[in-house]
Length: 262
Ligand SMILES: C/C(=C\C(=O)SCCNC(=O)CCNC(=O)[C@H](O)C(C)(C)COP(=O)(O)OP(=O)(O)OC[C@H]1O[C@@H](n2cnc3c(N)ncnc32)[C@H](O)[C@@H]1OP(=O)(O)O)CC(=O)O
Image (cartoon, rainbow, N blue to C red):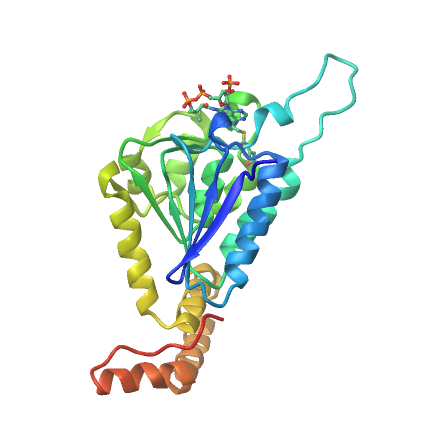
């Protein structure tokens, strides 16, 4: 059986590719299981500093596999199961909680569940020709699982507009509302991804993992408690082995020599 997800690692970057272009990389049970395995492998590999998630073909991801979810018959049939509801949250959580930064390299358009993956990633870069839609309501379902990641990236007015209308919007608008980090000309996509990956490689791996957690968690902490806890954390970091190496490298005018990723 041909794999639906590939994992390749080179120069500290693990690239995870959704490879089911015939159905536009729809999130089938099998694709999600392979995606979970590939991400777990990439995140757990101490040689990996940055994970890139991308897709093969013209579309990054068309969302839940609608053929797998579809009812088999007519009224009176057994209730339809929804396998995507077991696996998609697991995969989004893996990306969200990964101590390593995850860049989504959108090879093209994305819809619904695919946008849950996009929003789970720390960075998302797409060609300016890509289009987006939260098409769930038009199918009589809801953007429930993906709302957990999308509502942490997209500003509320835009989320209400696009969740409730299902309207298609372009990459420039997706960047404006916080769904994308950047929309770039298609020919500049790989250079943009390499640029971000290169910058991420320069940071201390532990510092990056902690900073990723801060971005997630600090907005939920009351201000006074946040001030106290972050001052403690900052003091710990200046005296940590990694912080000390960063400071020595600065004094000695050389690149820091980081230990492997946590
Ligand atoms: C997670 C939650 C909900 C969901 O995710 S619901 C999923 C909603 N997704 C959609 O509504 C997207 C449907 N697809 C499209 O709109 C288009 O295919 C596209 C992504 C815009 C790409 O258009 P393009 O013209 O490039 O391709 P085709 O439309 O000709 O499709 C080619 C081929 O692929 C099949 N296909 C496309 N999308 C899916 C899909 N999601 N599932 C299964 N199969 C799909 C399509 O049927 C064609 O197949 P043929 O056999 O060739 O006809 C809920 C929560 O958050 O809780």
